[in-house]
Length: 203
Image (cartoon, rainbow, N blue to C red; front, side):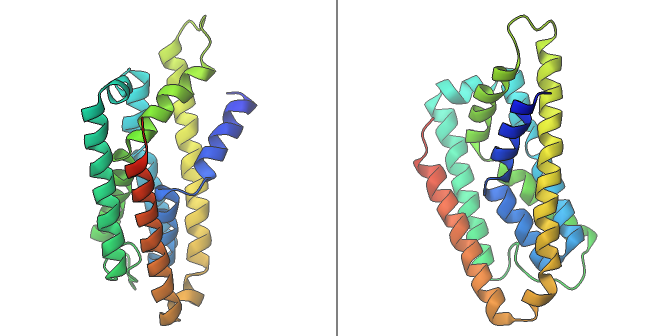
């Protein structure tokens, strides 16, 4: 796949973002299993953006101001909703003693929505993937699919690592209500900050 591609992919994946924050929150509030589920959900949320980049659909977001703005503000609204839920102790940082099937399903859905409702991802992949496909590539779509699969695998591994680390700290943090309160506030503030950043972003 190329060292350059792997390095650039890791830099992007490891950079703090909504997916990483959500996976950390899941591990901290619900444990290691939930962190893996969240990492998996965030990885699934990449698929629509990869498909858009590969099949040219992301060009619509790049050229259509209405399409881009509509998806962008839907993402902003969802981030603010998650921040409000977290502040009220009903969101991703709600501490649960057991991990139910329904809870896992909710984690996956939220994780997928976090990434789907970010038009910047489609624009990024529209500009990012073609850099690693030469003009004389006999099977360009196959090449981009392989690159995408590698990116998704790296995303899952990195996010799962974040989540498992948070889960390892769970016992120390959950037993301190005051600490959990401040973590919830920091988490909510981080989501608001990311929402504002997305709202101010341009194509």
